[in-house]
Length: 87
Picture: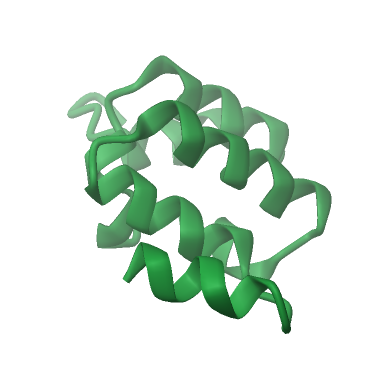
């Protein structure tokens, strides 16, 4: 799937969020977060779905909380997304 996205990106726009999700699932978290940062910069709508299952592989990474903060998620929403039982 990553090869397909990479190939498609040479001739058409591919959402950075989608590429980040695939990279995260493959355990390539550094590269995934690079794509998530680009997604935020490009204002891609899918990146706002912070509680979507494709984010599960990177959800416990401290950079994920930073991404949510960068998107101006309210603190209570961030806590819920990260699975904080006190929220």
